[in-house]
Length: 270
Ligand SMILES: Nc1ncnc2c1ncn2[C@@H]1O[C@H](COP(=O)(O)OP(=O)(O)OP(=O)(O)O)[C@@H](O)[C@H]1O
Ligand SMILES: Cc1ncsc1CCO
Ligand SMILES: [Mg+2]
Image (cartoon, rainbow, N blue to C red):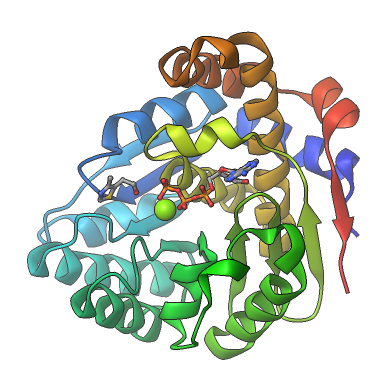
């Protein structure tokens, strides 16, 4: 059972270990992702060339693959890096950005999930549904009243892909198919800053680099990230998304055991 105490302890391990996180990510969020990982206490690197991704991936603590602005050259590099990470026992975290939006994206998400053993896949409900080829009604995306559906979707995806699945939104659901946690942290203003989902995927990478129990690592990342967002929203949310983005980077560097114990809202689901 992952509780706030365990969340705080994995967060502390990230700060102590300063893990190297290799990101092959999209051009929109690159800088924000690097700064977010630095603020948290991890060590980001972006490397894309197929000539070097295998060498980088095998020395990293985690590899993050994100198809937000995909192209064939980059996808080829992602698969090379992913396979090398698998060989080296480096956890691979996958963000199927926009799966379902175009056939190329959907196919690529499925190809990557098939070719690489992914430790965690993180996306919104529509992206996860499209990655496993399940129909998904938009009205179920807001986890409010539809959270039961999100839980079943997450469990199905975990069983089909044999991986931990994190579906984020108003509430976050994370499951390995057997054990499920619901996290009720975060703030709606996160949806007004681009790349907050992508940075979260990389933050899961930092946590997975220091904690072998992948479900625990992912749950701890979701709680820490959501609590940091609440701290930032309190400080700067009223001023708007620009101030919030900066306050959020600050909060990622400040969030610690005290805040996790005070604000962390994680519970075990069915
Ligand atoms: N309505 C909401 N209330 C509180 N937190 C939210 C809400 N919507 C999203 N979040 C939080 O925002 C973060 C990003 O999740 P989201 O589901 O928006 O990712 P995403 O769709 O991949 O985003 P993007 O592609 O824009 O980066 C998560 O921490 C999630 O919990
Ligand atoms: C806006 C946007 N377009 C492709 S990726 C991206 C960043 C959010 O994932
Ligand atoms: Mg996203």
